[in-house]
Image 1 (cartoon, rainbow, N blue to C red):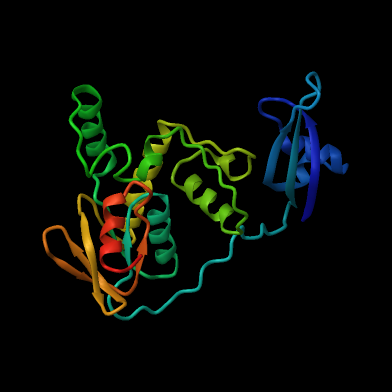
Image 2 (image 1 turned 90 degrees about the vertical axis):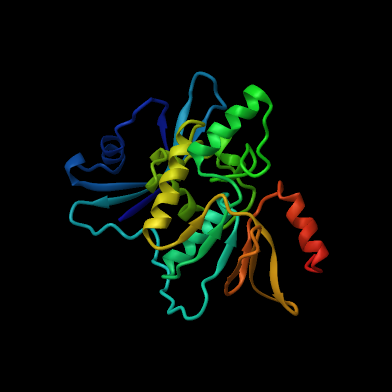
Length: 260
């Protein structure tokens, strides 16, 4: 395997990377087994000399392609499940990560799944009828479900490539795993989020949509579960708060309970 950094080629729509890399390395294209794109950016500093700049892993025929990610260690879980509040990106990926460790969480989301949510949003846009639980801010995928699907973060984390690959696995364009400004697209992001939720459910996570959490169930300073709007108590081991910035009413509840 050979790693190429700053591999530059003139801008073109669909470059034949195998042929270009083979020529660069002085080998036949038939000797190239696989190419993994680690990063790609566009150098547009010279208007008439646009260039793609790649970082690549090049595997020659017969070489085993290394795994992009090591699997998460499996955990033997005993006791009530971990609880997650919110089905935005943070909540969905929390559930995704629990499942990767072999743990089946329970997730609560006050809003609806995407299709039903879209109908309620349409009624708001057309008639001004606001559903306080299912709207542009609340529901499956969070506010980002009705964004243009840009996936930009200012943090530097080794987990970011895993997140991008997960989106690709659920139907996002393959290039988001390596381009500088990844973009799923406003129409596609809804289908990607739906596929993600469907997969989480199929793998054993419990996703309770249209379910408002009214308060935490506290034993002193320890969270032992949640209390739903209908008064039902659900026991859990720990709670991930991923309710987003639009859950102002719930933050007031937390304050009244002495949590924050």
